[in-house]
Amino acid sequence: MSDQDSVRMKNPLLLIGIGGVGTKLAAASNNNLGYDCLLISNDRRDLTSDNCDSVFIDSQPWVNPSSHKIRSLGLQSEAKIRSSLGAHSTIVLVANLAGRCGTAIGPLISRISKEDPSKKVISFVIMPFRFEKDRIFQAGVSLRRLRESSDATIVIDNDALLNNNPDLSLTKCYEITNEALCEVIASISSTFIQNSVSLLCTGRPDSKSAESRVKDCLSMLYENSDPSAIKMATLYLMGGAELSVGTVNSIANILHEIFKQREVVDVSLAMHNSQALRVHLLAAVHETTRFNNYDPLAEVIPRENTLDWEEMESSPDIEITIPNLE
Image (cartoon, rainbow, N blue to C red):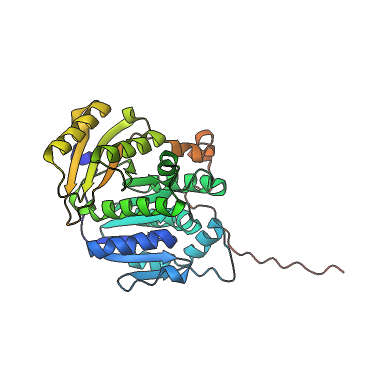
């Protein structure tokens, strides 16, 4: 892997969490990283961490604002956000694209960050379940914009995990994917991140063996992309201090056979004190994933014909005085 293929992170680094899930993951990850941290939300309950700065997007008097409305209100805080970005060289963005705040503010933050070409932007995003029909399109649009203004984009898909484990409760599904994100975010300073879109896949913690957890990861990967499109894959083995070297070597050989090229697979070992083993697979893919279908209009309407590409559509309040004609 050449230097041009990976994102080289530089200090100072700023970790930004957006919305309910994004702020929770950013705050939890920062407990291990110790970097500067910024939380952004339109709900004050998301901004309670003592170790992070915060920007509150005041959505009053709107009870249930749309993504467009939240983005419009977020633009009013643009000066404060720019100030928080300051002289940071690397921006790590965490957003849930199944939530309105994530889809609204995520692309805004990445765009502002990349106005300075010297900044590196790494985006971690969560995609909605397929049955959340009202969120699919907005998530697809926001993901496309985030990818354009990010040096690297890491995507985890709740839907792919649930499809392969239909007996999981929604709460357990969230727990598994959130933990996977936290652990990979915590390792970013010691690993290489591909400067493309990468799919983060994870195995169930109650699987009986390391091999079965890897199979879970591959099942998630097959849901979202063809393995032949993999440019680089990193296998994370977290915990499991008693895991044998022979087992690790066997797993690596299996992945080499699946991805056809030996130089494609890298294994990252993170032996924490915990005996519980967690397995994650981070696979960098070529441009097309199933998430392209979430925004079908982008396939038929060229970017140059998209009127609001530079500044996404928002919902400003426009007061129009209508005279009484009676």
